[in-house]
Amino acid sequence: MDLSLEISSALRLLGNSTNFGQAEFKKVLQKATDDLINSGKVPVTSTGSGACDGTIARSHAALATLFIEAVKSNQDGTIVTSTLEDFNWPAERISETVKELDSCRERIRSKLASVGTYPPHIVDVDWKLDYHVRVMSSAGEEGGGAFYLITLHTEESDGRRGKVTFSCSLAQLSHLVTQLRQASRCIQKYANNS
Image 1 (tube, helix red, strand yellow):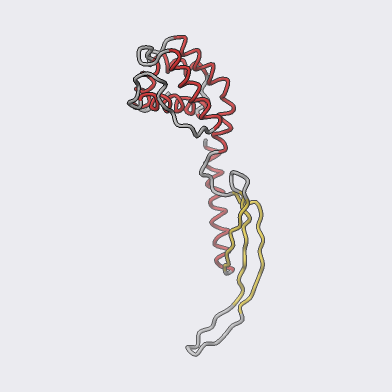
Image 2: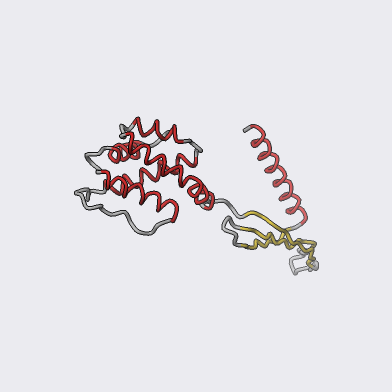
């Protein structure tokens, strides 16, 4: 598993029984799991030992990162076990951690699925053809012609609905449709090559 140097060093600390007793380790493990599943709002604080330098917070973040990366990459317990063995974790802590990860894997996956920066999806389109009357101005310019009023009904990843409304000429609408078709072909080509 590819983890940053900061995450790796924090995981090494968490696995070291001289830095974290078994009770402290279990508290960090439970807190990381609870925060990932329940989106906890209670900050990680010291568990009573002399670890007031942020070690517990870093270890909590590192363990949460390990869980997220394992779930995101769909890695099984053997890879997580191998990773933690590389950090010199005791076998008991590795088995507790893998057991905890396996028990909450699907809930973490559903939380990750609900998080995202996905653009709204277009679920419906309304359109209306309208006309401008040609008017001669004092400068001799003509205006007017047909234009389209288009409303795109969108849906966010969290289920909220929205609208995007714009107007365009026939030429602009044709250009938009051509660009959308090209984008669709590129996405299909990329999906077929993956």
